[in-house]
Amino acid sequence: GESVGLHLPTLSVQEGDNSIINCAYSNSASDYFIWYKQESGKGPQFIIDIRSNMDKRQGQRVTVLLNKTVKHLSLQIAATQPGDSAVYFCAENGSNFGNEKLTFGTGTRLTIIP
Amino acid sequence: SQTIHQWPATLVQPVGSPLSLECTVEGTSNPNLYWYRQAAGRGLQLLFYSVGIGQISSEVPQNLSASRPQDRQFILSSKKLLLSDSGFYLCAWSTGTGMYEQYFGPGTRLTVT
Image (cartoon, rainbow over all chains, first blue to last red; front, side, top):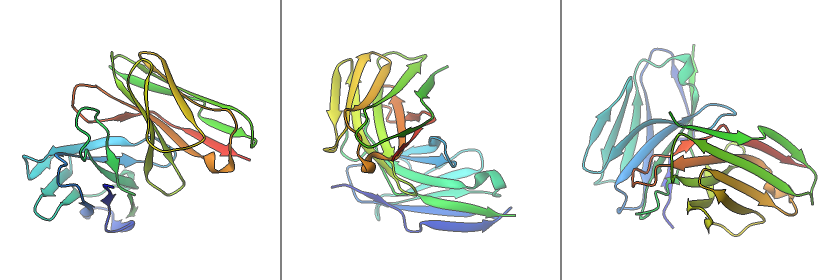
């Protein structure tokens, strides 16, 4: 079946530096992608999303890049802060048209080093 | 604004006991509703989703069941818990209008002993 995989399960970044979290997806039919942040013991929170008609989308300190040719998605966090420490999940809609289901990756744990 | 509630926040239950977890959404109508389970240090596994009252789709064979008795209420149940049912259970909703973005509740930590 479809899967969304992450290249790195853990990532440590010095506070103030930029971080990049990568995600590979396998379903070429996916046209919607989303990043979530999950802090320990809490539910995932929306960070940013992107549709397949875009290559890049920016939010506050975050940028999502989509490369449909190689089925790759990345989340860039600028000037990382201690509060950015969390697990980050990417998700895609796969072939789930009409029911809004998402397929989640396994997650990357980001640790910000003070 | 929309909010999603889950309770209880934590639960410790013996093997073989029944389970009922509840999720309610406020501030929206006709949402799609989802139940996920998350094992420690792992990703999200979709268990059930619902596009309307009484309409439940199961994603994986398991010891659990779901019901949607009201538009904004989603219940996860089991008649007899197994040790493997332990995990972090998350409820989520989406608008049902093709927007895909899902909004998650705070979760329930279930430990089966």
